[in-house]
Image (cartoon, rainbow, N blue to C red):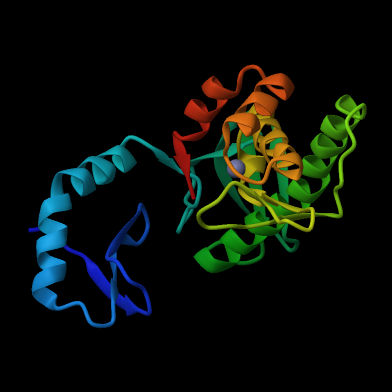
Length: 223
Ligand SMILES: [Zn+2]
């Protein structure tokens, strides 16, 4: 039996959202009966199962807990976690070891906070640098970029508003630079073409000929 959550909202049709972290959510109109929803889910069962299975083959970038010897990613490289009791909270990289110094080595929340802060600082510096490099590389085109934001997002790697504000998911700092560069290039293309139209992909192909392969690589990860 498939488990799912029902959320009734002001909408006209029934829709299904599948998330690796939140499972299956059915969004239904206020007036939809339980029977109608059940029938809809029944018809979509194969499709839902296929998606749920695909998540098991993917790598989750977010950790709920960290222990000695765990593997985590930073800029596409895998590091082994070493928890170091210390008077200061700090993260250090040595070869393929990531040392997390913390005053509270028994407190999972405290450990994750130290690591998150370190990822955040590095994402701000490094992703902005990559962004600057890509803008420079395509400086012959007139970008109407107003703002760049780097923040943690649940469902998206990046977004671009109609007013020219680009947001890049901070989690990209965990992946190889080529993947972060792809997302940045994708969002820059939206400055010219707001939708995923044929023209959009044409432009994307000019700026990043390898985009198909990069999307495939990126789809192996989720937050
Ligand atoms: Zn897009």
